Length: 212
Image (cartoon, rainbow, N blue to C red):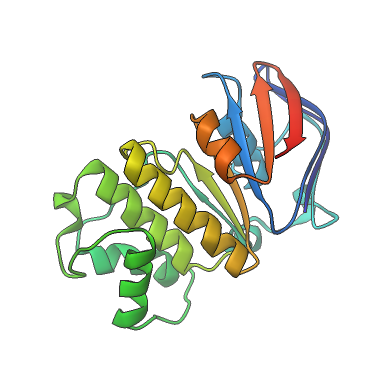
């Protein structure tokens, strides 16, 4: 799916060779400032590498239209935006921006169930806790039905029990729907428990890629 060769970005990241497989759950772990988020941003074309090549499905990433790429490869940052309005408004906003068909309320409730958020669709999203807002944003990404989900610490605002429930649900969703999940996590326990592959990076260097 993604192949990186001799990729350098400023003095933050250097990756000699990396292959991220399709339809797998890949976790990215490493110390703070090692370049984990930078790697996700490179895969989403939010930034461009200074040298080297990145391929997506055997095509040069640099040759792929950024808008088209982001319809298939959706990134959720660690502190996702929550817009004024209801939970429903926030769930639908990504689909509206991309001019896609609107799902029914039942479909929206199913997504809330998936992210373990038992709330009324009409509730003001700005009144939610940090962890609840994170789950609404996660639901918004899932509704986009991308081929690849790039998630940066998707459970950072959650307690350990809720984190395990959310990650397990995400992994099951990924496998049941033949998606690809690439996730930065602070927890090596989460990575070892749920991922098919782990990428461990340190500052300036990709140091390890292993199957779990």
